[in-house]
Length: 387
Image 1 (cartoon, rainbow, N blue to C red):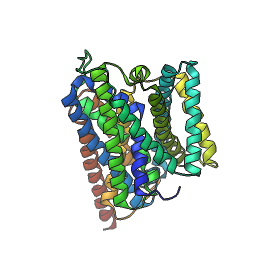
Image 2 (cartoon, rainbow, N blue to C red; image 1 turned 180 degrees about the vertical axis):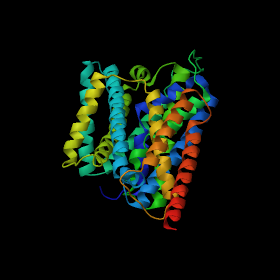
Image 3 (tube, rainbow, N blue to C red; image 1 turned 45 degrees about the horizontal axis):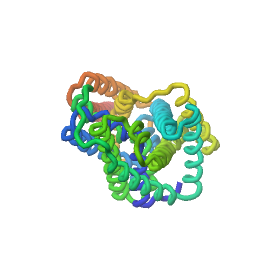
Image 4 (cartoon, rainbow, N blue to C red; image 1 turned 90 degrees about the horizontal axis):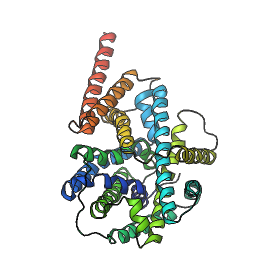
């Protein structure tokens, strides 16, 4: 992949954030009300996107993609575990995106239920082929078009007063699902950031691109649910701007899903030899479409938290290594790092499902502290052995 200029990097991550999934997730936060909902969205995105942008910066400065940086910390054996988990979550995310886009297409243009999924999956594959082999300009133009279309939709609410919801959500949970959305991109941002123009440019363009677009998508979902009582698919189906709805669905799905599929291919290189990238993209797109058809999962709040529970501790160790080490050190298997990451996953899972504190920050601080102690203990042991 060629160098990605800062404006294109900004639009790449803005395009990744503009999706039906993000609007839908914003709607989940609606029971908090407008003030608390906005606070949870903005604060959560600030935390999550800072971590995301730092992940991109780390890959750029090291000249390595996301899983290559994981290999530096977990070893050639440990990275296979993380890469396999990443491929699974990327295929899962792709399936979720295809499901929602297919459902929306069926609502806007009635058709055979599986046909919408097939149409979306086919477009995703050809979008990747064009984007990766011909030009990034089409992606930049598409993202700008998406921003305009979302602006049009946001001015077309039918309600004027907030609708009270019987559902409930805690502020901590709303905060965590706002943090977890940008965190879900951590295992792949390096695949693109390593081709950026500069470390500062990568950090700022990816941060502002994702933070602004994702926050706006969450807020749009919050407003739709709060003022109409509809989820985003129902809103688009009954909206007077149906054509705009169709364009938002198609463009937002492909600009997001092709990133997932491509990074699943990149991660697979840590597990087995990939001879033909385009063929693997076709295979993974077909698998994601098949998952969408067989397992029509749409409620993915728990899926978001599961991703956070795995990759927050993993990248805490990667970040800690980068901050403490002057150079890369590789081993066959970093057993201590794997064990700490597993403990961090269990801790995150326990905290998030019991509504205790801020799971992301607690896990980040706990795992980084424990890992620094582990590193110092190894260094001390090495000195003692030499003596």
